[in-house]
Length: 213
Ligand code: AP5
Image (cartoon, rainbow, N blue to C red; front, side, top):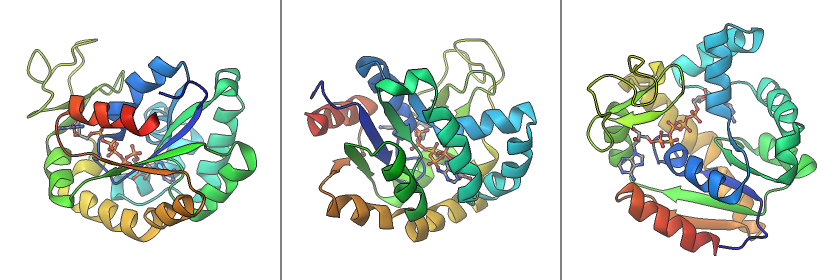
């Protein structure tokens, strides 16, 4: 892996496995894993103004308006730990977001997770998360040690409201219409590195490392 690369973006449809791969890679590179979905879910859980404004959009599977997300991300990128770089997971998701990132701290590599939609739908229907520590499980491929409980803090696992089938359908459509155009945005800038995101998490991790070399 190129040790000089510190600003990485993960791009891909819902359920592609971005969050699953991001934690370990960020740790390895010593950069923060910034998931806009996790930050927004924490704001919803804490009942902050941002959380109250974002909740309806998120539960329905729609994007939170750019203005809210951009303000939130600018604050996060200004924190001391982000000075050495970042692994952005779930941002940018629209052309205006990508343009705003170019102004603040342009990415060096954009990894695009490529996967057929029937695999996504199957993964999302089986996903459960810990409401306290955000650890992600999958009833089929990554089950908890004790059924229904988080391995780390024994909290009862929940299903994300936007993993209901009707919200998943909206999220896939939103991805195609609003986020997929970013593939071309980054391809034209010579930064896009596509990987095959089907297969086991270990297989995907190996492809990810190869793409970053
Ligand atoms: P966000 O949380 O970013 O959701 P997403 O992009 O839809 O991505 P997911 O978290 O669903 O999937 P993932 O690719 O991380 O997959 P995971 O690793 O969990 O955003 C949620 C919402 O917040 C948005 O809809 C929007 O409302 C709002 N939002 C966030 N950012 C925004 C922005 N920038 N602008 C506007 N709004 C924004 O894996 C999925 C499942 O598969 C898990 O169960 C996992 O265990 C399993 N799995 C993972 N890898 C594998 C594998 N290789 N094999 C088998 N199973 C696997």
